[in-house]
Length: 134
Image 1: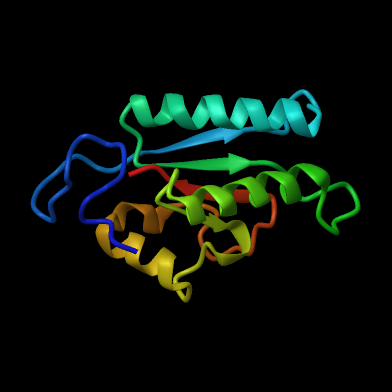
Image 2: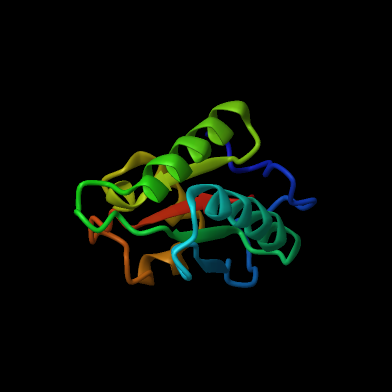
């Protein structure tokens, strides 16, 4: 993964002095939406976050009332994987992989060290996904 030349951001970030990179938190399970409603809202919110200059978005999709992986989590992560594979998003990290030992997470934390303070980092939170926007 090459984060030196971000996709869709219009600027290339440098390792020199810069403003802290912001992560937008988006609660997709609020209001108990259908999968389709959550998918449409996710697309809209990610596009909006990118326009607002966020470097990433943390999606709260929950993990299902049974704890075995709900429909929102499964379907939204399927779409995020497809987006990462097709290049419409630079990367996505499932909550269980949002830990320092994950290669993609580690590369992001080296680039954006302020994200080391994220409350979900290293907590194996199946109810979130982190989407890299730039």
